Length: 417
Image (cartoon, rainbow, N blue to C red; front, top):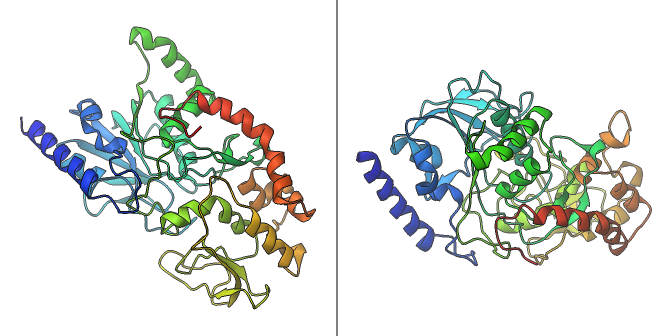
Protein backbone atom coordinates (compact mmCIF):
# COMPACT_ATOMS: atom_id res chain seq x y z
CA UNK A 1 0.00 0.00 0.00
CA UNK A 2 2.82 2.42 0.89
CA UNK A 3 4.52 1.56 -2.43
CA UNK A 4 1.32 2.43 -4.33
CA UNK A 5 0.76 5.71 -2.47
CA UNK A 6 4.30 6.83 -3.09
CA UNK A 7 4.02 5.86 -6.72
CA UNK A 8 0.81 7.90 -7.24
CA UNK A 9 2.21 10.88 -5.36
CA UNK A 10 5.41 10.98 -7.40
CA UNK A 11 3.61 10.46 -10.71
CA UNK A 12 1.22 13.34 -10.03
CA UNK A 13 4.03 15.70 -9.05
CA UNK A 14 6.03 14.70 -12.11
CA UNK A 15 3.19 15.43 -14.50
CA UNK A 16 2.74 18.88 -12.96
CA UNK A 17 6.47 19.54 -13.24
CA UNK A 18 6.53 18.60 -16.90
CA UNK A 19 3.42 20.58 -17.86
CA UNK A 20 4.22 23.77 -15.97
CA UNK A 21 7.94 23.65 -15.26
CA UNK A 22 9.69 23.10 -18.58
CA UNK A 23 12.21 25.61 -19.98
CA UNK A 24 10.54 28.46 -21.88
CA UNK A 25 12.52 27.59 -25.04
CA UNK A 26 10.47 24.44 -25.65
CA UNK A 27 8.01 24.53 -28.52
CA UNK A 28 6.24 21.49 -27.04
CA UNK A 29 5.58 21.76 -23.32
CA UNK A 30 3.81 18.47 -22.69
CA UNK A 31 6.44 15.94 -23.80
CA UNK A 32 6.96 13.15 -21.28
CA UNK A 33 10.20 11.13 -21.55
CA UNK A 34 9.82 7.41 -21.02
CA UNK A 35 11.29 7.55 -17.51
CA UNK A 36 8.30 9.63 -16.37
CA UNK A 37 5.81 6.92 -17.39
CA UNK A 38 6.34 4.84 -14.28
CA UNK A 39 2.88 3.33 -14.39
CA UNK A 40 4.08 1.36 -17.44
CA UNK A 41 7.36 -0.10 -16.19
CA UNK A 42 7.33 0.13 -12.39
CA UNK A 43 5.28 -3.06 -11.90
CA UNK A 44 8.06 -5.05 -13.60
CA UNK A 45 10.62 -3.79 -11.06
CA UNK A 46 8.80 -4.61 -7.86
CA UNK A 47 10.63 -7.33 -5.94
CA UNK A 48 13.48 -7.39 -8.46
CA UNK A 49 17.15 -6.51 -8.24
CA UNK A 50 17.57 -3.73 -10.78
CA UNK A 51 20.62 -2.56 -12.73
CA UNK A 52 20.39 0.97 -14.13
CA UNK A 53 22.52 2.44 -16.94
CA UNK A 54 22.26 6.16 -16.26
CA UNK A 55 24.00 9.50 -15.96
CA UNK A 56 23.16 13.07 -14.97
CA UNK A 57 20.48 13.32 -17.68
CA UNK A 58 18.44 10.46 -16.21
CA UNK A 59 16.05 12.78 -14.43
CA UNK A 60 12.39 12.44 -13.49
CA UNK A 61 11.27 15.98 -12.85
CA UNK A 62 13.81 17.49 -10.49
CA UNK A 63 14.97 14.13 -9.11
CA UNK A 64 17.38 11.58 -10.53
CA UNK A 65 15.83 8.32 -11.73
CA UNK A 66 17.90 6.26 -9.28
CA UNK A 67 16.84 8.43 -6.33
CA UNK A 68 13.21 8.34 -7.47
CA UNK A 69 13.15 4.56 -7.76
CA UNK A 70 14.85 4.10 -4.39
CA UNK A 71 12.20 6.31 -2.73
CA UNK A 72 9.57 4.06 -4.26
CA UNK A 73 11.18 1.01 -2.70
CA UNK A 74 12.86 -0.37 -5.82
CA UNK A 75 16.01 -2.36 -5.10
CA UNK A 76 18.76 -0.75 -7.22
CA UNK A 77 21.53 -3.31 -7.08
CA UNK A 78 23.97 -1.72 -9.50
CA UNK A 79 24.58 1.41 -11.57
CA UNK A 80 26.32 1.38 -14.95
CA UNK A 81 27.79 4.59 -16.34
CA UNK A 82 28.86 5.88 -19.80
CA UNK A 83 31.43 8.44 -20.98
CA UNK A 84 31.64 11.40 -18.54
CA UNK A 85 30.53 9.16 -15.64
CA UNK A 86 27.35 8.66 -13.65
CA UNK A 87 27.11 12.25 -12.44
CA UNK A 88 28.40 13.64 -15.77
CA UNK A 89 31.53 15.38 -14.51
CA UNK A 90 34.22 13.59 -16.57
CA UNK A 91 36.05 15.29 -19.45
CA UNK A 92 35.65 14.03 -23.01
CA UNK A 93 37.55 10.74 -23.34
CA UNK A 94 38.51 10.72 -19.65
CA UNK A 95 38.92 7.23 -18.21
CA UNK A 96 36.34 6.63 -15.51
CA UNK A 97 36.96 3.92 -12.93
CA UNK A 98 34.45 1.83 -10.98
CA UNK A 99 33.20 3.64 -7.92
CA UNK A 100 30.46 3.86 -5.33
CA UNK A 101 27.84 6.57 -5.64
CA UNK A 102 28.30 8.84 -2.64
CA UNK A 103 24.61 9.79 -2.48
CA UNK A 104 23.17 6.26 -2.50
CA UNK A 105 26.04 3.88 -1.70
CA UNK A 106 25.25 1.86 -4.82
CA UNK A 107 28.24 0.39 -6.70
CA UNK A 108 28.96 1.98 -10.09
CA UNK A 109 30.51 0.05 -12.96
CA UNK A 110 32.05 2.24 -15.65
CA UNK A 111 31.37 1.03 -19.19
CA UNK A 112 33.61 3.50 -20.97
CA UNK A 113 37.30 3.18 -21.81
CA UNK A 114 38.99 -0.20 -21.55
CA UNK A 115 35.75 -1.87 -20.50
CA UNK A 116 32.65 -1.10 -22.56
CA UNK A 117 30.46 -4.16 -21.98
CA UNK A 118 28.88 -5.55 -18.83
CA UNK A 119 30.06 -9.08 -18.06
CA UNK A 120 28.13 -12.06 -16.73
CA UNK A 121 29.76 -11.39 -13.35
CA UNK A 122 28.53 -7.78 -13.42
CA UNK A 123 24.98 -8.98 -14.04
CA UNK A 124 25.01 -11.95 -11.65
CA UNK A 125 23.03 -10.22 -8.90
CA UNK A 126 20.74 -8.29 -11.28
CA UNK A 127 17.28 -9.44 -12.41
CA UNK A 128 16.15 -6.53 -14.60
CA UNK A 129 18.03 -3.84 -16.55
CA UNK A 130 17.02 -0.24 -17.26
CA UNK A 131 18.73 2.02 -19.81
CA UNK A 132 18.08 5.77 -19.52
CA UNK A 133 20.48 8.17 -21.25
CA UNK A 134 19.70 11.40 -23.07
CA UNK A 135 21.08 11.14 -26.60
CA UNK A 136 21.62 14.11 -28.96
CA UNK A 137 20.93 12.31 -32.23
CA UNK A 138 24.45 12.35 -33.69
CA UNK A 139 26.27 9.19 -34.74
CA UNK A 140 29.61 10.04 -33.12
CA UNK A 141 28.05 10.72 -29.71
CA UNK A 142 29.22 7.67 -27.75
CA UNK A 143 25.97 6.86 -25.96
CA UNK A 144 24.85 4.94 -29.06
CA UNK A 145 27.78 2.57 -28.72
CA UNK A 146 27.10 2.22 -25.00
CA UNK A 147 23.52 1.30 -25.84
CA UNK A 148 24.60 -1.40 -28.29
CA UNK A 149 26.99 -3.07 -25.87
CA UNK A 150 24.42 -2.91 -23.07
CA UNK A 151 21.81 -4.56 -25.29
CA UNK A 152 24.29 -7.29 -26.17
CA UNK A 153 25.04 -7.89 -22.49
CA UNK A 154 21.33 -8.07 -21.67
CA UNK A 155 20.47 -10.47 -24.49
CA UNK A 156 23.52 -12.70 -24.08
CA UNK A 157 22.77 -13.07 -20.35
CA UNK A 158 18.98 -13.40 -20.72
CA UNK A 159 18.20 -10.28 -18.71
CA UNK A 160 14.98 -8.31 -19.29
CA UNK A 161 15.83 -4.86 -20.69
CA UNK A 162 13.68 -1.74 -20.52
CA UNK A 163 14.86 1.25 -22.54
CA UNK A 164 13.36 4.45 -21.19
CA UNK A 165 13.13 6.55 -24.32
CA UNK A 166 13.88 10.26 -24.47
CA UNK A 167 13.24 12.85 -27.20
CA UNK A 168 15.95 13.50 -29.77
CA UNK A 169 16.77 17.23 -30.01
CA UNK A 170 18.13 16.61 -33.53
CA UNK A 171 15.35 14.19 -34.45
CA UNK A 172 13.75 16.45 -37.06
CA UNK A 173 16.00 15.55 -40.01
CA UNK A 174 18.39 12.94 -41.45
CA UNK A 175 21.68 14.01 -43.07
CA UNK A 176 25.41 13.48 -43.49
CA UNK A 177 27.70 10.75 -44.79
CA UNK A 178 26.81 7.14 -43.94
CA UNK A 179 29.46 5.16 -42.08
CA UNK A 180 31.41 2.48 -43.96
CA UNK A 181 32.23 -0.58 -41.84
CA UNK A 182 36.01 -0.26 -42.23
CA UNK A 183 35.71 3.02 -40.27
CA UNK A 184 33.82 1.45 -37.39
CA UNK A 185 34.88 2.63 -33.91
CA UNK A 186 33.35 3.56 -30.57
CA UNK A 187 32.32 6.90 -32.14
CA UNK A 188 30.44 5.10 -34.89
CA UNK A 189 29.60 1.42 -35.02
CA UNK A 190 26.82 1.07 -37.58
CA UNK A 191 26.07 2.15 -41.20
CA UNK A 192 24.01 5.19 -40.32
CA UNK A 193 24.42 8.87 -41.28
CA UNK A 194 25.82 11.49 -38.92
CA UNK A 195 22.29 12.68 -38.14
CA UNK A 196 19.92 9.70 -38.15
CA UNK A 197 16.64 11.22 -36.94
CA UNK A 198 15.69 8.56 -34.38
CA UNK A 199 15.23 8.46 -30.64
CA UNK A 200 17.52 6.13 -28.75
CA UNK A 201 14.60 3.71 -28.35
CA UNK A 202 13.92 3.66 -32.08
CA UNK A 203 17.62 3.16 -32.74
CA UNK A 204 17.65 0.23 -30.31
CA UNK A 205 14.80 -1.37 -32.25
CA UNK A 206 16.73 -0.88 -35.48
CA UNK A 207 20.04 -2.40 -34.41
CA UNK A 208 18.18 -5.40 -32.99
CA UNK A 209 15.85 -5.77 -35.95
CA UNK A 210 18.62 -5.41 -38.53
CA UNK A 211 20.79 -7.96 -36.67
CA UNK A 212 23.58 -5.45 -36.06
CA UNK A 213 24.38 -6.81 -32.59
CA UNK A 214 26.87 -9.53 -31.69
CA UNK A 215 26.27 -12.98 -33.15
CA UNK A 216 25.09 -14.39 -29.82
CA UNK A 217 22.82 -11.41 -29.12
CA UNK A 218 21.34 -11.61 -32.61
CA UNK A 219 20.52 -15.29 -32.09
CA UNK A 220 18.78 -14.57 -28.79
CA UNK A 221 16.82 -11.68 -30.28
CA UNK A 222 15.70 -13.88 -33.18
CA UNK A 223 14.40 -16.42 -30.66
CA UNK A 224 12.64 -13.60 -28.80
CA UNK A 225 10.87 -12.42 -31.96
CA UNK A 226 9.78 -15.96 -32.77
CA UNK A 227 8.53 -16.63 -29.24
CA UNK A 228 6.60 -13.41 -28.62
CA UNK A 229 3.33 -14.91 -29.83
CA UNK A 230 3.57 -17.69 -27.25
CA UNK A 231 4.97 -15.46 -24.49
CA UNK A 232 7.70 -18.05 -23.96
CA UNK A 233 10.70 -15.82 -24.62
CA UNK A 234 14.33 -16.05 -23.43
CA UNK A 235 14.36 -12.29 -22.88
CA UNK A 236 12.02 -9.34 -22.42
CA UNK A 237 12.92 -6.26 -24.51
CA UNK A 238 10.72 -3.19 -24.24
CA UNK A 239 11.04 0.46 -25.23
CA UNK A 240 9.02 2.72 -22.93
CA UNK A 241 7.88 5.41 -25.33
CA UNK A 242 7.83 9.15 -24.77
CA UNK A 243 4.38 10.69 -24.61
CA UNK A 244 3.33 13.58 -26.87
CA UNK A 245 6.54 13.52 -28.92
CA UNK A 246 6.90 13.49 -32.71
CA UNK A 247 9.85 14.00 -35.03
CA UNK A 248 8.56 17.49 -35.68
CA UNK A 249 9.01 18.39 -32.02
CA UNK A 250 11.75 20.79 -30.99
CA UNK A 251 12.81 19.60 -27.58
CA UNK A 252 15.04 21.63 -25.28
CA UNK A 253 16.97 19.40 -22.91
CA UNK A 254 16.51 20.29 -19.22
CA UNK A 255 20.00 18.94 -18.36
CA UNK A 256 23.25 19.26 -20.33
CA UNK A 257 23.89 15.86 -21.94
CA UNK A 258 27.68 16.24 -21.50
CA UNK A 259 30.02 18.90 -20.10
CA UNK A 260 30.77 20.60 -23.44
CA UNK A 261 27.25 20.71 -24.84
CA UNK A 262 25.99 23.57 -22.75
CA UNK A 263 23.15 25.09 -24.79
CA UNK A 264 20.42 23.81 -27.08
CA UNK A 265 21.99 25.87 -29.91
CA UNK A 266 25.32 24.08 -29.40
CA UNK A 267 23.47 20.76 -29.67
CA UNK A 268 21.98 21.91 -32.98
CA UNK A 269 25.42 22.95 -34.26
CA UNK A 270 27.24 19.88 -32.94
CA UNK A 271 26.69 17.62 -36.01
CA UNK A 272 28.40 20.27 -38.15
CA UNK A 273 31.17 21.54 -35.89
CA UNK A 274 32.33 18.34 -34.17
CA UNK A 275 34.30 17.60 -37.37
CA UNK A 276 36.82 20.17 -36.13
CA UNK A 277 37.88 17.63 -33.49
CA UNK A 278 39.65 15.80 -36.31
CA UNK A 279 41.55 18.94 -37.37
CA UNK A 280 44.24 21.11 -35.79
CA UNK A 281 41.64 23.80 -35.11
CA UNK A 282 40.12 24.34 -31.70
CA UNK A 283 36.48 23.24 -31.58
CA UNK A 284 35.85 25.67 -28.72
CA UNK A 285 36.53 23.40 -25.76
CA UNK A 286 37.88 25.53 -22.95
CA UNK A 287 35.67 28.49 -23.88
CA UNK A 288 32.19 29.60 -22.89
CA UNK A 289 30.81 28.20 -26.16
CA UNK A 290 32.19 24.77 -27.12
CA UNK A 291 31.19 23.75 -30.67
CA UNK A 292 30.05 27.32 -31.34
CA UNK A 293 33.56 28.84 -31.33
CA UNK A 294 36.24 27.34 -33.55
CA UNK A 295 39.52 28.59 -34.97
CA UNK A 296 43.32 28.52 -34.96
CA UNK A 297 46.21 30.97 -34.29
CA UNK A 298 47.32 30.85 -37.94
CA UNK A 299 44.00 31.94 -39.42
CA UNK A 300 43.54 35.62 -40.43
CA UNK A 301 43.54 37.91 -37.40
CA UNK A 302 40.57 39.81 -38.82
CA UNK A 303 38.32 36.94 -37.76
CA UNK A 304 36.62 36.47 -34.39
CA UNK A 305 39.16 35.84 -31.62
CA UNK A 306 39.09 33.62 -28.54
CA UNK A 307 41.52 31.81 -26.23
CA UNK A 308 40.87 28.26 -24.98
CA UNK A 309 41.67 27.84 -21.30
CA UNK A 310 41.55 25.02 -18.80
CA UNK A 311 38.05 24.63 -17.39
CA UNK A 312 36.12 22.07 -15.38
CA UNK A 313 34.59 20.82 -18.64
CA UNK A 314 37.90 20.79 -20.57
CA UNK A 315 40.97 20.39 -18.40
CA UNK A 316 43.48 20.39 -21.26
CA UNK A 317 41.77 21.79 -24.37
CA UNK A 318 43.36 21.90 -27.78
CA UNK A 319 45.47 25.11 -28.31
CA UNK A 320 45.21 25.93 -24.61
CA UNK A 321 46.17 29.53 -23.77
CA UNK A 322 46.74 30.36 -27.44
CA UNK A 323 44.94 33.25 -29.12
CA UNK A 324 42.83 31.77 -31.91
CA UNK A 325 41.05 33.40 -34.82
CA UNK A 326 37.99 31.90 -36.37
CA UNK A 327 34.22 31.87 -36.03
CA UNK A 328 31.52 32.60 -33.48
CA UNK A 329 28.30 30.92 -34.63
CA UNK A 330 26.22 31.40 -31.48
CA UNK A 331 23.58 33.18 -33.55
CA UNK A 332 23.74 30.92 -36.64
CA UNK A 333 20.31 29.80 -37.90
CA UNK A 334 19.20 26.27 -37.12
CA UNK A 335 18.60 24.37 -40.37
CA UNK A 336 17.30 20.83 -40.94
CA UNK A 337 20.64 19.81 -42.43
CA UNK A 338 24.30 19.31 -41.58
CA UNK A 339 26.22 22.47 -42.54
CA UNK A 340 29.65 22.15 -44.15
CA UNK A 341 30.31 25.78 -45.00
CA UNK A 342 32.43 26.51 -41.92
CA UNK A 343 34.62 23.46 -42.44
CA UNK A 344 35.16 24.36 -46.10
CA UNK A 345 35.91 27.99 -45.26
CA UNK A 346 38.39 27.01 -42.56
CA UNK A 347 40.27 24.68 -44.90
CA UNK A 348 40.37 27.34 -47.63
CA UNK A 349 41.83 29.95 -45.27
CA UNK A 350 44.24 27.65 -43.43
CA UNK A 351 47.79 28.42 -44.62
CA UNK A 352 49.43 25.00 -44.10
CA UNK A 353 46.86 22.65 -45.58
CA UNK A 354 49.06 19.58 -45.10
CA UNK A 355 48.59 19.93 -41.35
CA UNK A 356 44.88 20.84 -41.33
CA UNK A 357 43.78 17.27 -40.55
CA UNK A 358 45.38 15.59 -37.53
CA UNK A 359 47.42 12.73 -38.96
CA UNK A 360 47.85 9.42 -37.09
CA UNK A 361 51.25 7.78 -36.83
CA UNK A 362 50.17 5.10 -39.28
CA UNK A 363 48.91 7.63 -41.85
CA UNK A 364 46.33 5.00 -42.79
CA UNK A 365 42.96 6.47 -43.85
CA UNK A 366 40.99 4.40 -41.32
CA UNK A 367 43.12 5.73 -38.46
CA UNK A 368 42.44 9.44 -39.07
CA UNK A 369 40.09 10.72 -36.37
CA UNK A 370 38.44 12.98 -38.93
CA UNK A 371 37.59 9.94 -41.04
CA UNK A 372 36.17 8.13 -38.02
CA UNK A 373 33.90 11.11 -37.44
CA UNK A 374 32.89 11.20 -41.10
CA UNK A 375 32.60 7.43 -41.30
CA UNK A 376 34.70 7.28 -44.48
CA UNK A 377 37.72 8.94 -46.12
CA UNK A 378 35.67 10.44 -48.94
CA UNK A 379 34.73 13.66 -47.12
CA UNK A 380 38.38 14.49 -46.41
CA UNK A 381 39.29 13.93 -50.05
CA UNK A 382 36.36 16.04 -51.20
CA UNK A 383 37.47 18.92 -49.00
CA UNK A 384 41.09 18.66 -50.20
CA UNK A 385 40.01 18.57 -53.84
CA UNK A 386 37.91 21.70 -53.50
CA UNK A 387 34.44 20.19 -53.90
CA UNK A 388 31.56 22.51 -53.12
CA UNK A 389 29.06 21.85 -50.36
CA UNK A 390 26.40 21.12 -52.97
CA UNK A 391 28.62 18.56 -54.70
CA UNK A 392 29.46 16.87 -51.42
CA UNK A 393 25.82 16.74 -50.35
CA UNK A 394 24.82 15.19 -53.68
CA UNK A 395 27.31 12.37 -53.11
CA UNK A 396 25.56 11.45 -49.84
CA UNK A 397 22.08 11.11 -51.29
CA UNK A 398 21.98 7.49 -52.54
CA UNK A 399 23.07 6.09 -49.17
CA UNK A 400 20.79 8.48 -47.29
CA UNK A 401 17.82 7.31 -49.34
CA UNK A 402 18.68 3.67 -48.58
CA UNK A 403 19.03 4.39 -44.85
CA UNK A 404 15.72 6.23 -44.70
CA UNK A 405 13.92 3.12 -45.96
CA UNK A 406 15.44 1.06 -43.14
CA UNK A 407 14.74 3.78 -40.58
CA UNK A 408 11.04 3.96 -41.41
CA UNK A 409 10.52 0.37 -40.25
CA UNK A 410 11.49 1.13 -36.67
CA UNK A 411 9.93 4.53 -35.94
CA UNK A 412 7.71 4.80 -32.87
CA UNK A 413 6.60 8.39 -33.45
CA UNK A 414 5.11 10.41 -36.30
CA UNK A 415 7.83 11.41 -38.73
CA UNK A 416 8.91 14.83 -40.00
CA UNK A 417 8.18 13.85 -43.61
